[in-house]
Length: 262
Image 1 (cartoon, rainbow, N blue to C red):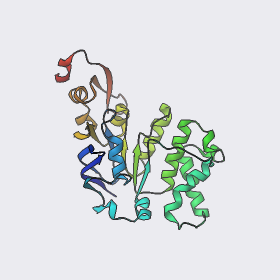
Image 2: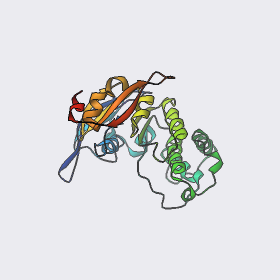
Image 3: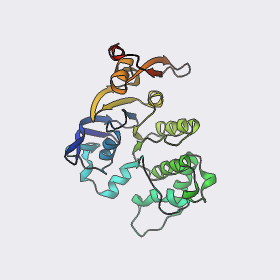
Image 4: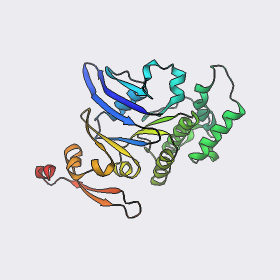
């Protein structure tokens, strides 16, 4: 499935949080959304998975407006892992992941043997099989994050929306989770804080600044010293990863205002 935002704006309290965002995430592609804190990444994603209703523009799945889709149909198309998610009850890991199966059943339907197999496979994908019977509240932040990703995978969506999915994860699990998403065959739209992870994983990168789209393209096209100085206020040296050939960034503070225009 393709996901597209067409001229999306979101207004709250009389203030535009994001304005006229247009982006495309095509079937099977990994699309990254990057920008400084407060640039509108999370707001854009919340509009994409219909937690926030745009004040203007449209969110489309295969050309169909998301707002026209029944909630259960939408949940079978799009799964989201939000940046902030708090567990109020001490479900086991298995129980939490099984919640991802709800869009595939009626409200009172029981979990089937087939559902359990899907959930077990999702836990195995994120490396948490050994914690299946543990309470979620006993887990570390990184383990909880992987539970949320497993729950999204158990939902069996066609589109995966991830808001800072590597929060709380060590470097090994950061790479494993993003590689899993990249190789899943799903359409992935992810807000990423780490620009080197974005450079390593994304097919396309969209850059936000002050709620507006600043640039888009491949990591090589977008993550340039000039743009990083203008948008992030840092001086960046771009080098090639010796294994993948993808750009990697080395950062330092700007020495002076002239560096913004180098």
